[in-house]
Length: 433
Image (tube, rainbow, N blue to C red; front, side, top):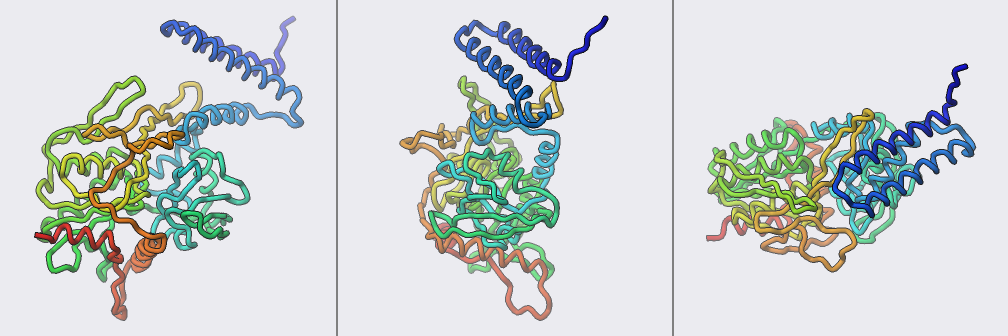
């Protein structure tokens, strides 16, 4: 008589089969007995916990939820930027990289292990509710976010159009604790902006100054950023600009391939950036001959919220003596995440595999737990600090400019970004003899 296994035993055998496959793969690696014993022990514990939970937990356990939770925990223990992504999360990530997603319009990072707003989309739901760069998030819909991974935070923020979220946040640098209601909406990311809009709603990339100076702000890097930047840069060059201000403040990064693409427009040879693995293997990304503005004087504005791809762009052009950097030290997020699709399920892991190294050898990343390490991020050539009030005023001016997508004949005022002390210093650098 043929016997059948009950679901619990089937799942136990699945763990055992997986454990066996891992054992075979490890035996094919170079001998590392201590490491292999550690991995074997860890997976024995997983099998044991799985069996106990399925026998004794008060409610039936769904297989996918239990295994997925284990995978998420494994990735989160590596660093905040490594994560497990199921099918739905993969789709959300693709939409975000394409420049559109459903959410509240914030990019988050970790500052002293606290979830912190690196950038808020101008005129997005969060910015309209008063949540701006530098504010730390304390809870989302009653869920405390301390010790949550980046993917967990993004999942909490995203949802259906119009669904409200209760956000508890603290204003930057230990300021006031506030609670606000924010409704999710479709966020279409326009990453290239000028100083103001004309009456037709088009961005103007030339400042109204005695000496013609271009101004381009990149809010983050998505698939359309490079081509859109080329169009803006061509308008600046054709208008006869004597210099360009490239504003990367409050830019959380994004697709670093777009940062390399833009850096290549200003230099014609040499390494733009390298990636370095833990085994010190390197990959160099080199400039090509497609330079569009090789001699145009350039000032780049950065601050503590300029991260990742923004740091690559600013740091590369600084190391090539191609730009003067004005502002404050950048964020220090210089790690490379690769998306690796799993063969065993419709999912993937986003795994930190390398760090960015600038042309002169500086590693951008600020390592967690190394408080005495000062060699990280991008250091400006001209350091100009902003107060909290000045920082919020800059972002508020961007929001005001965003509100006026098209001017009517009755409008006698054209909103423009404020010329703060960093902005003014950039103009001085470009106009001084």
